[in-house]
Image (cartoon, rainbow, N blue to C red):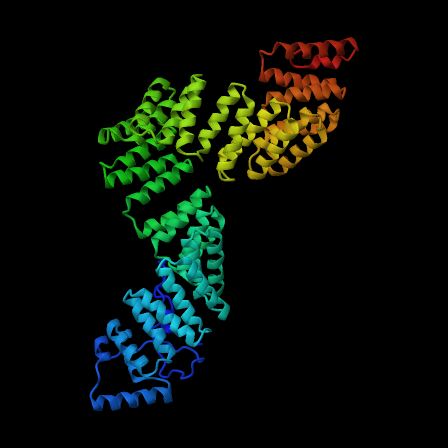
Length: 616
């Protein structure tokens, strides 16, 4: 089957959807109904459709008869060729008239029906175009290109189910072509059947992996379905095909940011900024990414660049204040005041000021700022969250719950609001309510989101309080699965296993954690304490000695070393360790009394070397 050459996408180097349209035409066309469709394109002289019904003069009738006979014998009508020439020159009315004359001579000439449909589609006479395609299919139901063009037309007519069915026929006829898959993907996307659309785009790219619009659309859908890792791959492929398209680099930036891969996001954003160095929004996004990386000075410099471009723009002042609040609280408040001078009714500026005041422990003023923000925009959920946090901090728990509920009512998937709602209930010892709130955090937050991780830890604590230890352990296991690089959950898991006297499992937890964090002092201390509890004193001593190597001035490690040496009946070493511990905490009276008691005991036993202790 011949590919209508113009059906190749017009913008293979653009991320915009392609426009499929056959263009070039072969010199000959098949005469039989079952033959392959030629590529339909050839311009013709202008002819009005009205003239087709007028009886031609005798000479014209002879010529028409001869042309018709030639068409039947050789398979190609001169009028059809003229139509293709008109079509190529985008003179679609003239092309249509020529195709009509060709079909008047030979109503079974299928390529003319196909081209007639295309010309009508160009003229936006879509119902007539659809009739022409259906007529071509009556002559040959196995023409992939007709099914394809028909499916594309139905897509343009927003008749998506019919479009997909037509394109599916094209796929069944020729599974190697990428075009039917691509347009099916567009149809599925329009119907919000995103899983089917993603599959169709992937089928498209298996057949044509340098098709930019498919990579771009695939990335968009993967982001929409929260498959960020795969979306990143799609956008990277797109940027390789169109490295000068700054919007693709921005999509890659946004995707990496959603994955909390801020360094990768910043690298992609820098490429966008090289291509569009004066865009204010890119400078603001750069500042936000730098803030996420805790590179606050650089973030502020980015916001200053944006302010330099538009000194009276409110948003750069707000974002600069949000960055400054981490280290320069009063300067941050001044930024918000500047934003409010420019726009006194800025909800975000009042919210930002409330955050800065809250973090500066100016709670009354913070509450006033949040109240102003919620007054200006009652549907701005972060202001209700901020208000709730202030109220929770000043022990007005029931009012805090109302504020968090307002935030959640506005934004049902607001993970942070659900988290603090759980905190308040836990503080009120309403643990079942707290657990339900933490469960909601896990449900609405992304798996990599730290709010979900924190909620799981808090959920485990509530379950421990309720003595539901197996449930708590399962919760910690889930937290560890979601955030395998976080050590706090391993410490909690080990402590719980110790509480329920599953000591070997606790030791395994600490040992596994030490393979990941070999220099983590609290892990070594926990391990030493557990081994001591299990009367495995030699191993415990080696473990505590490792902790002391990591931090020679750690008081707890020296005290534990003293206790273990006593259990090993090595009093002289224990006394020396007590002496070091006393130096670290000279006001610890119990420690001094314990050392002196050991010294006196050794003297009674006649071990004079005990008096050599430097503090005796």
